[in-house]
Length: 290
Image (cartoon, rainbow, N blue to C red; front, side, top):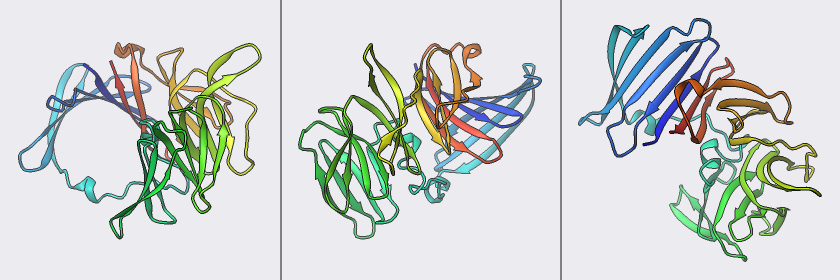
């Protein structure tokens, strides 16, 4: 059974949340670890109530001795009205979308939702509640990895796995990268992709950086990264050669380990999502692992 682990990193605390499978009652254990003493353990249990709210019971345990227990009721409709700090003018799609096939993006200029169904991409206008066909891939396959920058909608079709772009105003298409592409994310005008890289001696999966304005790739690439999450000029990811959450600069320099998963007996990570990154240095991750 997969476990959901949420990591909250700050200057002094690292929180780890582990959740059970969706078919069971939600169970969340939170471990707060002081980076200097490693002596604080917090467990949190969340269960749905019949009054459409969530009861969160927190048990603070210092060296496995329970010292306090509190319960807080949080209405579920809080999330329905909360405005998330996500801006499509900065990021072409959210980290959650990018790591889950990238099937939808939001156009903040035209106030439209673009979403992929099969080999077509549609535009939904929430003001009129009308949907229109944006384009259909001539090569077939399934459209995924949507990422919007300015007037250019980047996408990948499973028919050839090339990275392409659709010009919204003109209806023209561009081929950006002619090899298998699996992931697309951006920060301002930098597009990061996970794709096959072919050299004279070998072919391997790598992370590449494409300059949207200059229409060229950075000559430097990097490998060993999975589940990339873009935040500013940094890429947070799972480093495949070690059981670590790692950060690297946008030009693929200065790799640093943030947290090691070895001590938690995790053998496989299948998803890693950066939920929040603040200027104070606090980071929130969600991990699906076993």
